[in-house]
Length: 223
Image (cartoon, rainbow, N blue to C red; front, side, top):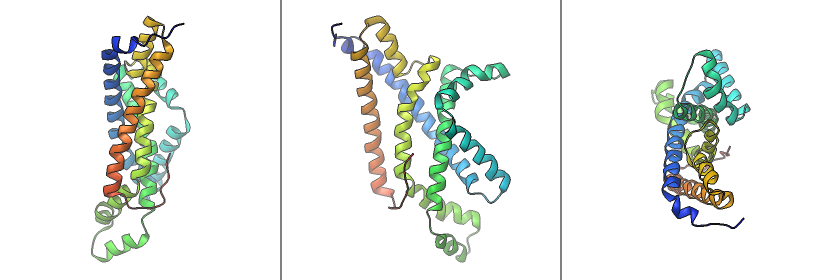
C-alpha cells in the first residue's frame, strides 16, 4: 500500500483535538494522583498500623495489577455493582488511582531520604511532630522526589493511551478512527508517536527547570 502523507494535514485538526483530550486527562490524573500520592505516602510512613496496612494494600494492589485491567474494571466492572462513570470520568479516575500508588512510593522515598537529624532539629526548636513534618520534612522530601516525579508524569502521558480501550476520544482512539477511514496505519501511528514525543519531551523540559530550581541531590530512583 502506498503511503499517503496528505492524511496528516487533512486530519490535523482531529489529531490536535485528540491530543488536547490526552493533555487534559493526563493533567487531571497527574494532579489527582499527586494529591492522592501525598495522602497514601503519609500513610505508608505512619506509625499507626491500621493506616499503614490499608495504604500498603492500596499501593500494592494498584502497582501489582495492569493499568488496562484497572481501567476495564472501573468502566465495565463497577456498573455490575451499580456504580457508573462516564467514559471520561472512568478514564481519569483509573489513571489517577494508578498514579497515586506510584506517587505515594515516590513521596515516601523522598521523605525517608531526609536525615533523622532534620526531625530532631525541628523538634528541638519547639515544633510539634505535625509542624515538623509540614514545614521541614515534607518540603525537603518533595524536592528530593522531583526526578522520579518527572518520570511518573511522563509515564502517565504515555499510559493515557490505554483509555482508548473504553472508547475515550483521546489521541490514540482518534488515530484509530482515522486509520479506519484512510487505511494508512503507518502514517497515522507515526504521527501519533511524534505528538506523544512532543508532549513528553516538553514535560521533561518543564520538570528539568523545576528540578534545577528546587532539587536537592539525593539517591532517589525512578519508577
